[in-house]
Image 1 (cartoon, helix red, strand yellow):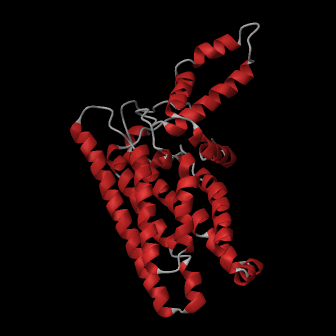
Image 2: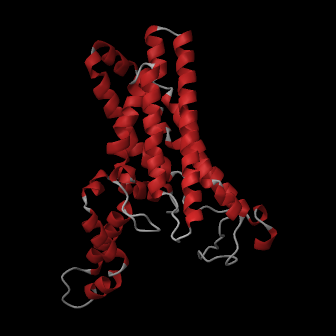
Image 3: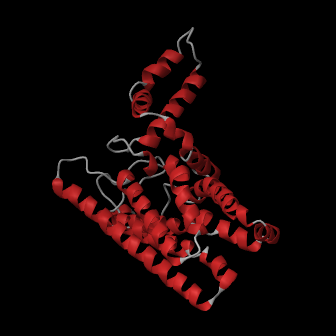
Length: 311
């Protein structure tokens, strides 16, 4: 995971829609194999006369881990609904994105912006931090933060979409206005997603993040750094803007700037939706893992940038 290509491949595997085909019973069996029985399985593979080699067994265990991690919450092992998984982004979020890029009037744009942020909120709810204790106050605080982020994300997306759509339709006319409306989904999604992410993650600045050395050991066990947490929150928030580019910016840009493609769609109006769908799904399926892979899950920070107690 130290290199972009490694992170890209990991996210590409996590976004695989085929992971949605496994039932809950199958997923829990794979979870047991990968997290409970793995030591015994590897031990049997090293015995003489084993059915599978150690290399084949390791591949089986990694695949079991991939299947289990795709469908179960990492903290509570709760079942995550299919539309709220990384593997569900292409089949579930893809049609929403197609609608947002294809609409050419204000009301449908506002509707699909609301649907998009509602789906994002569901993803955050089922994949976000969970309280593993029986403390009702902790659970209420988490749910309250999610509701606040959802409300502000929806409000910001609708305000930006309505404002830009009104401006475009007022100052431009005909085909030029229709072409510009394709790009409105991008700024509305960037602002809403970034705001959503910051609200969800901002409590981490107060609680802080643990600092690890090169051996991935805690520098000061039991201590956390607010400076490191702040950098992590800001980096994650910035990443949400980049994540929108493959979906909401690149396909409209290609449709508007590639002259042969643009002329083909003018001559064959019935092909607008199929071509838009194809470009968006390809960009979504390949570009989303690439955008996620740009940002490492664990980053470094200079000693002079953290609190004195860590130096």
